[in-house]
Length: 193
Image (cartoon, rainbow, N blue to C red; front, side, top):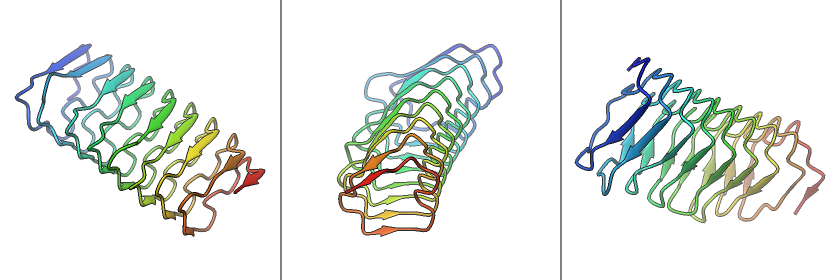
């Protein structure tokens, strides 16, 4: 952690564990590659926290969990390729990733944690998978560019989940059964179906 000169990291295919805060505040880190059939199933707490130069990442194909604050404040992160196997995105995992444009989950994702994508101001589109059950509290709050959300199998939208998403003008509920208070407060919603 704190490797202030590190610009690139190519991780070995035999890697099966990457410690919490492993690349914490590596402010010049621009690229990370996970080689071949890497066996990494979890990205731990704050692993890439404040890697402000990191612009894109293709996550390991067997990844199951992204823990809390794993990519928090990676301000240059524009794209993330989420694997089909991903089940959980933890609290504040991508909070403050100001340049992130899209979040597509078409696999096994079950839940998105509290403030997981909070304040991702360039986020424009979110697609949630058919097995996604829950969108956590403030998960996408203050994503001011968010214009499109596909709810997939989501059943529960928690408090403030989309609060402050001023560009969100229409939504299709899909399977949503429970909408908590202020879930869509201060949005641009004009059409709901």
